[in-house]
Amino acid sequence: MWNNKLDIYEKEWLDVVFSSRNQTYGAYDLRRQSAAATNKALLMVMFAVALLVGGKYAYDRMPGSSSTPIIENNIPVTLDHLAVPEIPKEEEVILPAEQPVQKIAQDPPAQELIRFVEPVITDRNRAVEDVASQDDLKDKMTARLTLKPVKGGSFVAKGEFGPTKELGNITGTATGDPDGGTLNNGEPFVSVQVMPEPMGGMAAFVNWVGKNYAYPDRALDQGIKGSVIATFVVETDGSLTDITILRDIGFGTGDEAIRVLKKAAKWKPGVQNGVPVRVKYTLPIKLSTF
Image (cartoon, rainbow, N blue to C red; front, side, top):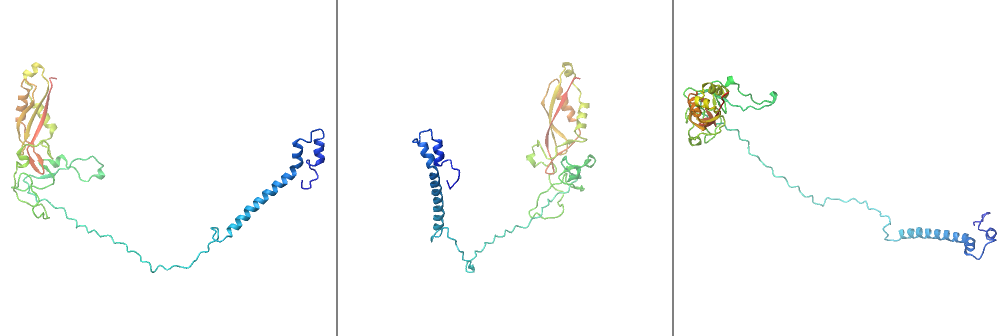
């Protein structure tokens, strides 16, 4: 094949290989014709490749072919004649001028007031307002603001917005209902902004009740123990009225509780909206024989 000197498919070699075999068998003819078959196959592959390459080249050269190069026209286009749409302007919202905070026209009090600040646990450096100490609260009434007393003034500072809500300093006259009877239709409150408190504090009052309460002999003899629950109204002047027993364990324990509470000193009255009001208070008295 291709004029090679050594070719095992030459007739001489095939005669040697098939000297003792049947040369009419198909294998002898296949080996003898294999070189010609290989050359034919190679020529067919080459022809097919040439046909594909030539066909592609001819197709690309045909007019209207998508593969034909496109020459761009770089003539500039002027857009002067195009109308540019106007961007609508947003409507400007004019906010009304901020109104200054109105101050309340206040009746000057007869007793000095000190602002009550609810205690809030926080970092000292972040505190907005200091809580009044016990010394500051002595002989003063807690309220929403701090005011100096005025001789002949009302029992506590009162007032409301006027029709024109004028700005200015605290104004008013020493008028108004000192007992706050118009609030809650005169009925005692159960909870108010500033709850009533005994003079000297609740701990001192409880200690006073314990010292003055005489355990009834009948209750001692029977070994009676438990809690007597009393209720009373702290009036606007701090006095205790309407003392009743909600739960009595008997043998004179409830009557003794009433006797002691009637002897109690006046409390600091409860305050609602800067006005002293009547407040209903419940006090449990625990009794034990040991």
